[in-house]
Image 1 (cartoon, one colour):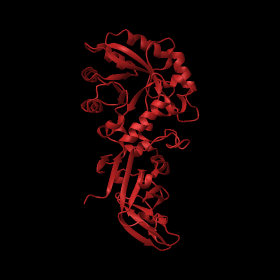
Image 2 (cartoon, one colour):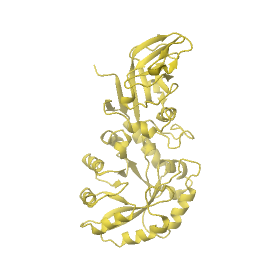
Image 3 (tube, helix red, strand yellow):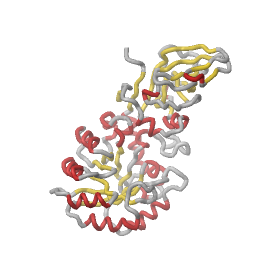
Image 4 (tube, helix red, strand yellow):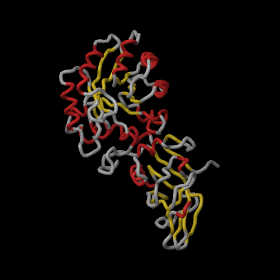
Length: 365
């Protein structure tokens, strides 16, 4: 029989979370951000749950080809834009919209021969200091773009550096508004955190397009200040395995490599068929939450390549084959947030989703 581990992709939860983004910014159109292979879910697996979006935003041409192959005829946006001339040729062929965030991309457009003008998104650096034109150079870039016959419409764009933190978006949004005042075109500002936290009170954050990413996949963009449940989000990925061995420990017995955990009293543990080669974080320490038969318990000892060990003290009915939920939707409607697991491992839910290993069988439910 196959090794008892699998990932489940929850189509209804994807659709629910996308609808949640719409409710947060009801006047805006919504990009479903599917970069990084739909945050590890698989574009093809996630597509059915995200068809209610107004467009798909991603990074590379191969992903754009896959979305088109699924039958999508609406907008697709390249969030980092084009890197060479043949990328622009692919944009013309596939009818892709693309971001412009530096001078070289304007020069590429100026030299591009096309019969169909492009839809471009002109990005401003409002404090992230990754991509985008400085505010002082933004209007000049807009003027150059607007003078090109290769350009149809220009959407004005920025990305908030601290929408999930204490500074919020007020300063960056004000800078963007000041810089783009009286420039025509749609605007797109809001990522997941900005959409959930600020679009209601600051309408400009939610107009005219929002770009929800992590919230679509059921993770809170500002955890632990708010949980996914606080935001009424549903987990879209479940990683689950089964117990393949049971052990009774005596006081002083250690568990796993290096004896990283030592029992201080008699206890029962179980071995689950999941390890870091499956994408579970190797650095997850003793105490990281798991569910066994839907009941909350903890990891003990080190994560191995193919196995983890879990404390069964609180789950006396656990047997060989009992279900172990590493994150996501467990038995009986119980949920283990991926954010909790990520926090215990010193990382974020994004990384755990994207790290799901190819060897894990994955099903759409």
